[in-house]
Image (cartoon, rainbow, N blue to C red; front, top):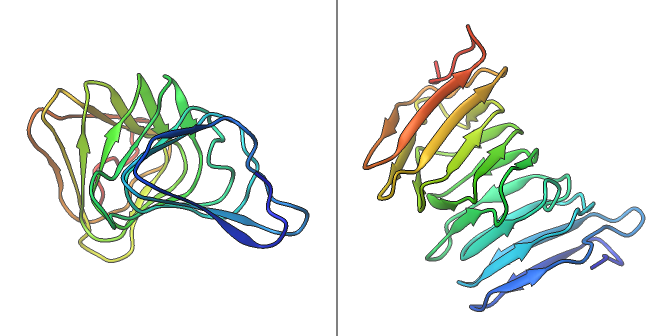
Length: 193
């Protein structure tokens, strides 16, 4: 899919679809991607679009490090079953991410957010399987006192790693059968400030 002008590609239905082609801008025009509906949209290719990816509802699965291009990722919760995950192990996505709503994660193996993450309000992230969702970039906040809640019914693993300190200032809560591993470089702040 290629944009012929600055536009938005919307995926909005209740069925599950896999897209393996290239999602790209045309010259001088940024393409944005919006995921609505309860179905799961799986992206398998290495994409080059530069606009924002907005995940409002349903499932968004990425099977490539650059599945979401180079723009920002915004996770909202505008509908039920908002789930973000990967269908293959070892995916590392570098997109700057803003979390505006609670959501579930469904990684295969380990799925890593290596770009900066911003919490807009205290957010709950729920693991749906016994795999790992890792943050190797810095986690910040839009307002003081923002925290994060990790929860899971299966034994999901969440991980803080990398050299960038986390700067959010609220509480970090680990509930249910979830585990939070602290693997930041020695001397780097992992649990906010």
